[in-house]
Length: 544
Image (cartoon, rainbow, N blue to C red):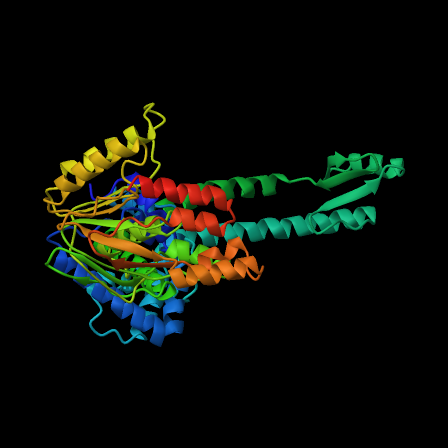
């Protein structure tokens, strides 16, 4: 497995894919089943990135044509079951035939719109093609309309039956008009065009007269009126029975036509399925293109050399949330090699966000997406693992630390393979001495493996090893600290603006440099009693 559901959720990949907007059921199906490009699939991933690059260019240069294509996508229904019925030699209903007519009509419109893109070398597997044979089949009158019914042109016999039905219906109408005229003459009353007459109940004599009339029949009554209608004659009844018999013949003949049309459509089922596949792929590809444009993504470069380089990368979910608050995200740059890298910094210093950013961008690149950064170069991984701080498994009754170790144990099994292991605040859930020992031992183990491991930590001494890369969140400099202190004292700023002065960028530091003790400095800024802070500094110094 490339990435577990839990790791994917913790890296906010659900947010990434939610922002990937597709419009067709076929694109949605591909999106739901999207898979990463694995080691050995560099060529295929490069081809996908080439296509996204092309789409991004088209979005920028021919925006309205791309919008036109996506608008057609919105009208495409899921006809998977219908086409399966065709393959199974079942007879399609009129509604199903109508939906197929709409589908092939959209294919022709898509084809014309795609021609306007001037994408001469557009790959065949993403290019929907018209099927004029089916268009002509379902539009025998050549009207070009989107409506459909079983046309007379499909069968001479059907046309003959319908003609006879129409003739008999005309005879019945003529007979009814004669009867209506006769009744009106005899009674001196006007009947409705439907052959009905409504009489008020207070006209009791007239009601009795109408009841006894041989050409009228009681129909219904309300508390105010009584309704009569023309009585059908023996001739009308005979003609009506004839129509019923002809309707049965019409239905049988229509079934034969639907059977014929279903067989004819089956001849083109391979082309239909290729079109369905092309529509899904093009829909998803355009979604990736808009995703790249919307988030300012760039094409990641694939390297055969193990490593991850991100220049000014951005965590798009955090960035979006900050933007809503009128704040900016600080881009992060990292250059990771095989082995272990430790990230240190203040608790509010953005270590976890940096870790998530590395995982998110690595996953996005491997899923064939452009990444939110100025530049990214990476090697294909066999897996990505992410252990988020404060993780616990309540179902199994495990502590925070126990749950963390259960997850890390799984990652260790694959550490000999090329992968990415991200661990947030290792051993946070246990006592400091044992936590340090376990963390150090795990780092010693992982530094010899093929995986790229990145660990955030608050333990001193984990970065002393020359084989361990040490990155530190810059945080608040001494100069900035003094500036903030003065502004807080003068009431020019509030504590809630403290994050504006944090520098969340990562810098590589000397191995011997300790984990920064920003907690006391931040506590001082937040106004904790100075006597307590002095005592804390003394205790810290005594324990060094």
